[in-house]
Picture 1: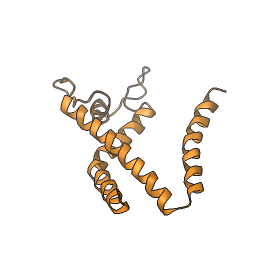
Picture 2: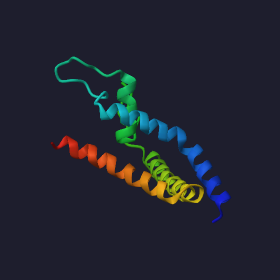
Picture 3: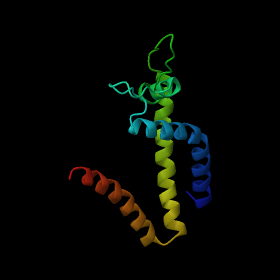
Picture 4: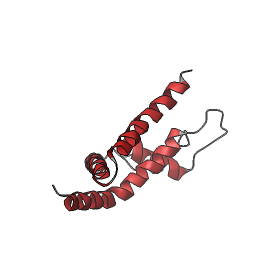
Amino acid sequence: MNIKSMRNIHLYLGVFFAPLLLFFLISGCWQTFGLHEARKDGSYKPPAIIKSLSQVHKDQRWVDHAKAPESSVPFRYLVLLMSLGLLATTVLGIIMAFKYTKGWLVWCCLFMGAAVPCFLLWLARL
């Protein structure tokens, strides 16, 4: 595969899945901090839209006040395709990074990208 083909695949997969990736990124952030769940002491109640969008993220269903439908199987397959697209664009991006920049710098970035999260998780154990 030539570099122009890789760039085009990277571009179009990235653009196609960007809205869904942004949704999962944003909703994952508020879920990381527990903003989608009410506090037991009643000090915080999440907005309805946060609760509904969290259901899409967690259970692949849109919940409104009237009913809670089953998970959407087609949506699950779309998320699977998005994950595969993200995997493909990430691999293509790494390949292009090696082609366009110094290899040692790419290796350093890859190492740090793996080491920093592991280190931060390890710190929490202390």
